Length: 252
Image 1 (cartoon, rainbow, N blue to C red):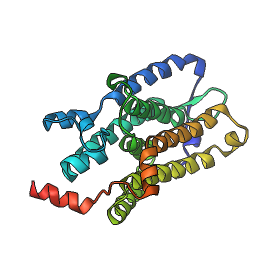
Image 2: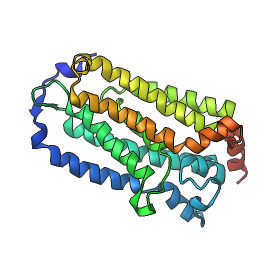
Image 3: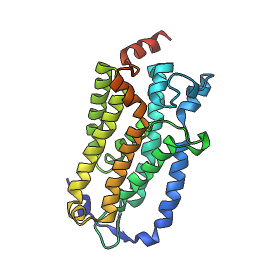
Image 4: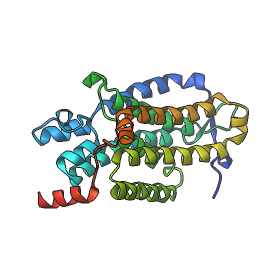
């Protein structure tokens, strides 16, 4: 495998492109504000925010409308989180920050994705009451590395299947979701730790910011699941049976 750092790169100073990142942050935030769960539930003549847990996300959609609708919602939210990362990669993959060997796309794709997730969790159009960000985060990680090496997709897919298997066996949907996000974060963080080990040792601010975004994404998703964690500890968390939801979908 050819190292991306060995490919010809164009240089770009942050001072010459900061306004593009500012614009991207705003655009990605409002992309994140668009909530598919609310839209799909309106087509079902209801409002998912008034049903079940009240969370406008894939898990509540699955519990309410069945596995098929939950899967559609997850897919839409995942695409919402992943496409901006892909766009960032396509725009900046041939550039490095001036005076460094840091590929701008390595920073930009997580920067774009982070603001999508923030918009999903804290949407201004819904008075900052949004979903928990699992599907959008999984989408970000699904696109972020596979867009540079296609075979990375199979690693993400295998891990995703393992998470689904965990949820199917334990029926702990929230814990499975958190394990999925944390596991993919650790894997991708390790990739960048190896790629930029010299810059990381020198505490390069761009590389440090990439790891800070990893941390922020995880803190955000775990904090949004604080109620679920309390219920898990107390043994009061709702079970999410994939098999039962699948049978419900078949009957309907």
